[in-house]
Length: 440
Image (cartoon, rainbow, N blue to C red; front, side, top):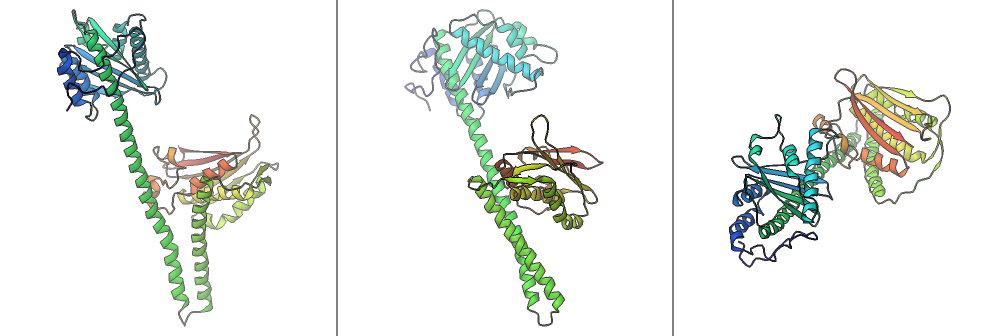
């Protein structure tokens, strides 16, 4: 509970020519009830709507608008209250140029800037047009705005934020200068508190998301490790049978070899990912014929393509394309993308692997791998290269994987001084084309 001797916890930075903020927010007995009411709500979640209502009610305003811009994040918060209605608060984010949201954001920023300039001795705020545009509804400004004839604009210029408190009234409505200075400090506290609360919420959500990724990865890794080990244990038990024929023994030895290779590949991928993050791996550049490299990759992928009922369309230019790169790392990249295409392609479809000549506009070589299958959901697309992140469809359909493959691909491509991007567009009926494009 605040006391009459409570210190100022956060103070607005006064402009030159502006009445300095009082040393205590409680200076002046006439402001004491207002200070108590405002202080009581500052720590409440989403306090800005309550602040607008309490502030407007206590000073006898018809309406109260709170505008705050945080330059570091470009976040703009707009809160409004008027008599007889519940307060509302919304973020005015960066929108498409020319849209109504973009126009509303520009109006709000203009009101903040004009209020700050007025408080510094500049031109008087012409609030009527800006407020009318900010409050505009489908049929124009709200009817109650016609009864408003006065506006007290209070600039809030705190550390890392700029804002304005607009108190709208009628007749001879005014707010004392000392009260305005105190309200500027209270507004700065409220805006700063809102920013900190938002940061806390975002950090909490991020921690929850990271914890989800950790749990999902551990569950997936447990499955990916146990499955080959179970197969190997079964093969070993079968090899111990005294009545085992040489043919069956050879088959179980093949199973052991395949599952051991699967375990080794998984461990190597995790180690390589860690090495890439530490930027500790070296790149052995050499002149590489990309046509020959892709042809060899296509031959090595035939067994997997046949197992998944897919065909490969290899598209190469007529002339050789030579690139200075690390062929081993590039083969790893393309192999991971080919495995990814095999996992997510619909049966009886075609995987396309193409190579383009050097582009005349930038001299870069373009490689693409595309396949037809389920769509990559819009929420997943920006995170497709995140470490341990697996799409909703992969988890839902039980597709094997640890979420390391595409993260490894991005790390290797960046190490090779290339770029990679992905698109997912509707193609055949009920099928989407997913395309990975690499440039070197």
